[in-house]
Length: 150
Image (cartoon, rainbow, N blue to C red):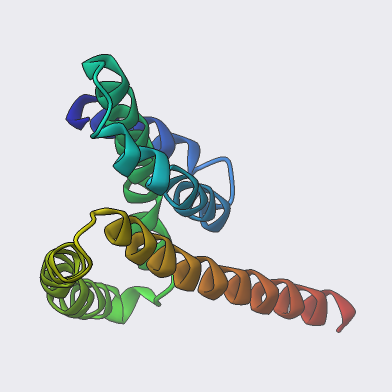
């Protein structure tokens, strides 16, 4: 998993210079959403190569997001406040969501007796992220159209 994540981070970080970053982040999020259930179901599979394949695919989609998310976030702020803005956004979101996600995942798995609810949680979080990105895409297109019209 780590090898594919590192490779995907480098590849998609490079591609972010040529393709709109928000589309790459959206694609990574869509990939994680679509692979959540197969990923969880693969843990019960007898063939370990299936588990390895699913871990590699999830790692590739995580790398797709990680390779393009940092340049996207940093380009969202003007240069004179960029370092402070990015560090605040990243650290607050990591503390709130990165700290609570494992707790919520363990609670769901133990409360309902199945790890499938962890996949549902991941799919819910991905859905919220994708809706947010669609909103950002819509806003940027409207802003671009307004600039072209004037």
